[in-house]
Length: 112
Image 1: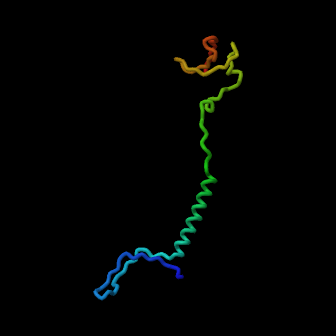
Image 2: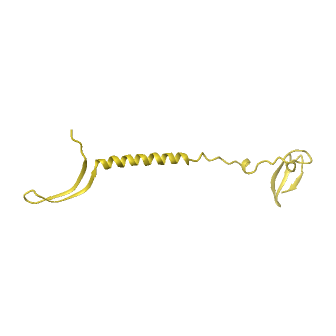
Image 3: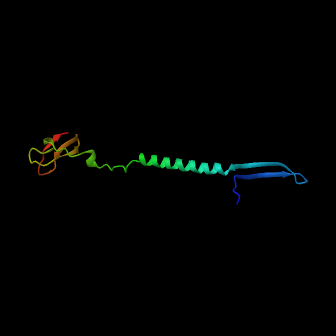
């Protein structure tokens, strides 16, 4: 059994009246060894890229909630001195302020 060492694809062949070939243009002339080597190099490159992608892969982005941006501060300034409930940030016509969470039962406020 004979192995093919070369692949040729001819674009056009011009002959004379006697059938002699005057001109032949080869569009593609590839050795099968080159094809096998190209496939192997492509496979190695793909494996390398896949391994690099898995190394540099970022985890799923964390969802940010309002509590992440504005955590409840647990210090003495965040509790109402009159009733002991938490103070929450509110907005009014003069800007932001802290007011007691139990409003309207407790009307304590302080400037932000």
